[in-house]
Length: 380
Image (cartoon, rainbow, N blue to C red; front, side, top):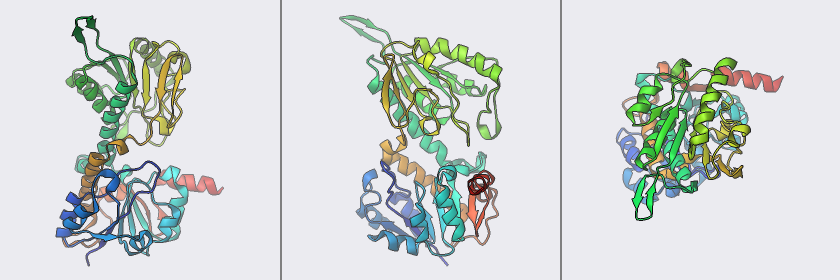
C-alpha cells in the first residue's frame, strides 16, 4: 500500500530550508506516493504553496493533523519530542537528527516504538553519494562562509590595477579541505584571492591544487576511516601548529572547516595565534557548533579580538535556502529509493547496508551504538 509522506514547516530558529521541493514532490507523486505538505512549508525557501499543489502535493494547514497522518515524516531539523508524540505507531522519520544533541527526541522515538533514519549517518560509499546530504549542505556552507568573510574583510580580494596604484590580492587561508573547504577554496579563487589550504589528509592535496590553490605540506598522514581525518598525536599537533602559525600571520581571511565526527572540533587557532594576525583580518569558523576551531569563537556571534574579526556562524546552508533545499530534497529522493518499493510502499525489511548504517531507532531499540552509550550514561 502506498505511503503518505509528510513535509512539515521547519520550526527551528533561523531555519529556512524545506525537506522537499516541488520538483521532487512531482516525482514521488508519479510513483503513487501521497505527499502532504504543511501550508507555508516552502515559503522561506521561495517555494510557494501553489508550486506544491501543481506538483501533486496536498496542502495541510494543521501541523498536528499533518504529523498524525504521516507514514514517513521528512525533516531538515530534528522533530521535538512533542512532535514525535503526535506520530502514529509505525511511522518513520528521516532527516538530520543530530542524536547526541537531541537525546529527548531519541527517547521519545524509542518509547513510541517508531523508526528513524539519521541522514548524517549514511556510510561514505559510492552507492550513497547521491544521498549524501552532509556533503551537499557542506558545499552550501563553504560558499556562504567565503561571502561572509569577504563582506567582513576591509580589503579587496582581487588584485586591482588603478590610477591610484596597484592593489595586491587578499591572502585567503582555508583550514580543512573537505567538501566545505573545497567549496570555500573555489569561491575565494573566483573572487580573486590568493588561496592556501591545509588538511591533515595527504589525499586532499591533489584536490586543493586542482582548484588552483597552494597546498601547505606537512609530513603527516592523518587519513582516517570513512574519508574523515583521524585525531592527531601531541607531536603531530605541535608540528601542525607551527606551520599554521606562519600562514595565519600572513592571511587576510581564514576559513576553518575541521571537524572530527562525534567529537569536539579540533583546536587549530589559539588566542595567542589570533594576537599574531594582521589587524583587519577575518576568521570564519565553520566548526562553531561543535566547539570551534578557534579558541575565541563563540557560536552564533561575531566579535573582535586584537583587531581580528572572529565569526562563528550557525546553519549557513539556510542562507541559500533555495538551492540548499533543492540539493537536500534530491538527496532524500535518492534515499527513499531504498526505503520505498516501485509502487510507493515501504520495503518490508531494512536490509540494505545504507539503511542499516543510518537506522538510528527502530521498534524501541536504539541501533546507533554511540547514541545508545550516551543514553545509558545519561540514565546512570
